Amino acid sequence: MVIINSWESSQDFDSELSKIEHYSKKHHPEMMPFIGSHYNKSRILLVGESHFYEYNDNNNQEFEIKYLKEFWYSKPTPDIFSCKDNFNTRKVIHNFLSLKRTKAYSMFKNPARCVIEAYDLNNVSDSEAFNTFAFMNYFQRPSLKAHESINNSEEDAKIAYNTFLGVCKVINPKVVVFLSKKAYECYINSCDKKPSVPIEVVCHPTCPHWNGKDGKEKFVKIINQHKENISFTKYKYYSKDKIMSVSPKSFTIIKPRQNRFIKDKTTLRIYENSEGIYEFAAYMITNKNKIGIGYNIEYQNIWVWNYDKKEYISIDNIKNYIGLNELYLSFCNMLENL
Image (cartoon, rainbow, N blue to C red):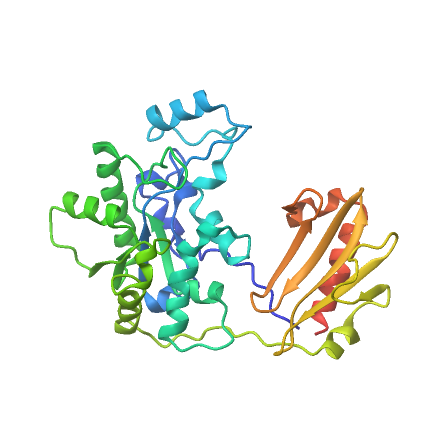
């Protein structure tokens, strides 16, 4: 049976983290830090800068900007807020870990690659490697401009500092690494006592300087200084014959460049490289939509994708597509038999 990883945050510290004022139900529990599955051994806390507000055609911009400026620290995020998921730390990390990525995710990918380098890992994905860390953003209010530094106020600085101290008290890191010089400088300017844990800062993982001595090189050294004996989950490749032997007889095997979608048929495409099979997926047309269900071996992840709408389908919404639940169950049974 293959490993299926949900890539969810550990909840080991949630009861205590929720007692931090900013993470209480009255404020913003969605900003609670991500805790990796290997964090209890590594105890490395990464600190980014901030989440961001993103404009789109569905935004009620006047209402939302007013809320962010005037009511962010006094009221929880409204349910009707158009880009609420942008502020959910764990959902942002989950999207990265489960391959729902954009170019901005080099913010997480580059630190994960440093883990792979420091531990000299083979057959370990960057998603698995990132679980070495806990992650939070320092500023607890989103930037008003997408992909730009926050123009923080004194209130932002005060709440950021107090929340950061609260997190450190709960999860007890061995070392804290700031991935933003702006956040680090704000912390230093707010700090009124010597920290009880080593505080480091490196270049932002998305900037050109990351590949210099103050970025990747320094970060790998930090990991090596605090290296622990971690049992990382490794992936293994499968042969084409093995995949075909467990696929349902109702699936039509198609070649790599053959059309994935054939009317009234469920097709199976197998993707391979010199190492073996790294991904395979089943395809069907339902509700006039072209749908694919796949398993990525390296990331141990199941995905469901609507090719017409160009969006992922959550497991909870599979039932909204005729025949898709049956295909999902058949695909999962196939995975169980590997």
